[in-house]
Length: 260
Length: 323
Image 1 (cartoon, chains in turn purple, red):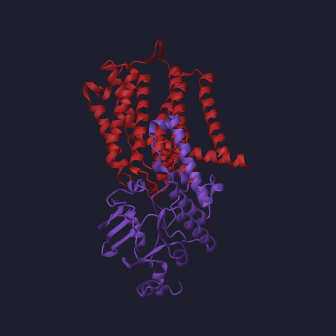
Image 2 (tube, chains in turn purple, orange; image 1 turned 90 degrees about the vertical axis):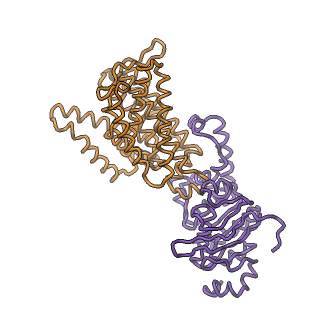
């Protein structure tokens, strides 16, 4: 595909080995600004591992990840997040002891700067910052449709809505790159539909997004580009239609699961 | 939430009334001195509560920070003739620096390395106090530390010290509340809930833990300085490992992740300790039962009120509110 812009995220020959297992094997692809890329593949294909390498949770064995030309690998998780890489987790990682609003507010951490002393004294600058962050968080909550649940303890929400809290938390940081790790996992059909519509709206805002997903109809519907991983290797990067017709992909992935 | 805020304000008013009531109902120096001790221990426990309840780290050396404040004030005023208030501030800064140097390498690591480092640190500091020669006065300590004063008003009795210490405790509670309701406080709670998710929200977990640890050391140092100027005497004895453990017990009993938990814990343990001392006058072995009894209390609290007394009491209050 032709893109005149430089990639927002460049994944360059990333390799990750656990002991004797090659989880990610020399994977390279680009994600261009404003594109929503679906990352698919059978279980154990290395999709989540790749996310964990890009976000600094795991150290890569070799390779590089560039965010707007700036190398990410070797930086700590929080530094990478601070640069504007937000993510959600396959196994929900909300903050259970906090309210929905506080969860989402935490996502905007990188937009605050108040130190300890002004904070404990609650100086006017701190109050102003708090107001600004709250506005950002409320906007994110409204975007995912949870504005009316702001004061509720996050742990009391059903899993489908906790997923939305996680997405709102990621959006509240106003990231440059959003990584969604199986957002539809554990959701009902109805919830998955709502999620698909939400991801579509995220795409419409122009936020560059990579989404790992097993729900093929969701991927085919919202993603402009699809990358297929199998046993750590990149099989293909193409449009959804081309991916569905790719015999290699059908053999490795779609064939195995049958339906699609 | 509105009801939560009201409850918070109510708690503060009740606490302030209790604090104000003690000197009105009694002029007994014994009871007032217990009040002062509870206040000083609360100052240390509030910081330790932030560390344990929010940063999820344990310090087994907070008695040493308390001791550094006490000895810092004693040495700077006695040997160098400094103004006592200036000595308190400088001792607190020095203690903060020490805490920073201990916390910086250990809090980057996962697991309870801080507990191990502070355990060793506490023992070393105690030895330094003991072997410090003329500087620390050795095992017999430093006598004749001056009273604090503001102009001609001298904090020379238990009542006056009480009236100095408790407003500071209440101030600390307000500062803690401000902290917890801020971006930094959310970051701390996030770290407590899920470190991985916290880091994915751009939170530098190590730096935030270090911040709380240093703050808790400053609180302990100031409390220690006030102690030294109150009793006018320091020796190594009160600053050992046992007191560090007692501080941890106060936080566990009262509840670390609450505003008032550490204060309630400090009060509960100090009162129990004094009851045992009184009982010891009639029944000698009771005096040495404190460690056993504290152990039993910790086990009971962990079994029945794992989040501490304050959370347990509050939960009842909220339930009644809703009914």
